[in-house]
Length: 631
Image (tube, rainbow, N blue to C red; front, side):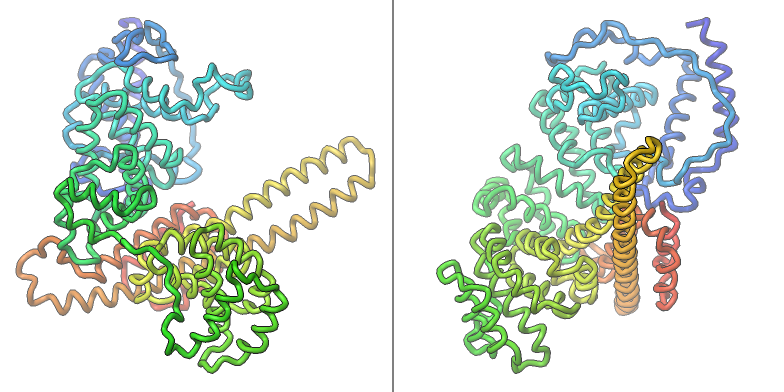
């Protein structure tokens, strides 16, 4: 519109002056851009959302402010029939007023960085691509169930015509957006970008997975760009943030399970010949293991054979049965372990008193170097192995003999012995190991900080524990942090009730009762904060120590290989310690992204612990500064 051209020119002049003086995204983020990038961007394009929007504005200026074609398309018709109908004409953008402000973003981690998945999408007009992506993001926000965009009068009303939170309807609305070149590719890139957003996606991975599944069911033309996106991410596995690799595995396993695990597995069969530590081989292993949680081994083996990729079957764990650590008849503890297993079996179900008497008589002075720890291992392994038939069996046995376990597990070494016992019994099944470990923590038989220290206690044990240790690690970290959040909410609610009572000025007894409750909650909060600080410091310290060890071994590895480095390494030839060093650095960054605000609260304690360490590697030192500055 000609009457708006002058307003647009004024707005452009203001934006231009700001963008000319604005530092690059790397500088805005204090040199920490790589921490928020899912993967490095190599095309030299914009690095954050503001730079990307500025590119779009410059394209609009070059086109003399012509409206993008997708904004001129009527919305009354679409590709698929939907319950929620749009108006025939799109709304007009109101006049914008720019107010001078010196307010800075509260935290630098809130700046959105760019995510570019498929290079061919850069050929699409920037304005049309930007508008379409923005509409898809709004649709994802609306149909995820949040009511933040509702009018105040509608926020608390039930339902919304049966539309709110409907993934199927959301997929239909996305498909009914105005068509642009490479529309399906833009849709997939936008949804995957939201799923991979760091430090945290707006919604759970399962929500984005369901949306992509419905899009594939509604329109078959979604499949080709989706396949291209998956292959592009697979090729970027070595440089993809480890947290994003976890999300990729979770998404792809759920997606494939909804399409009978059909995929071009033959394209990935080459990883079977790679070294065990190669990132792409470990990705395929983790993906197939995740798929076995959603199907049977025989089913997946048949799928891989039909896809001309039978070699990938060797990457799956066929036997996931429990292992009794004292099965060998020549083991010195075989007899007592077998007796414990028999006593706690469903057939006998001996009383707690009988088991306590047996422990005092037969397990009090075991002929081993660590009798207390071995006593715990015998009891825990016997109970866990006896409950191997199902998770409910294991819970029943552990719950029945909880008093006995609490009486024998009374030190940090005993807790670590209990964790070791579970890992030995379920060495072949990572899922069962995680579930039982988590239950022992919930029963307060193992403290979260002890489990974190056990997971990070030895560099050589990382390989033995496999990638499941990271899932268990962050599961442990979430518990104290969630407790602090709950207690703070309880304290705030109690304070509000107390203020209301004081304002009313009545019932002194109730006011005194609330004051007492407030004091008790504050005491609980102090303990919870101490536990939170301790476990976060332990996790950071453990990762730094492991990273330091990996750096030293990597340097030695590179020195040994130096004479043979006249040519670039081939597929899968990267050193094991170099791979583990990169993985540990990635987990340290993940820890900073997820708990940066809590880590800043214990900065002094962390600096004191890390100050005693001799960290020689420059990358580790830089990451320590990054973790301490995130919030």
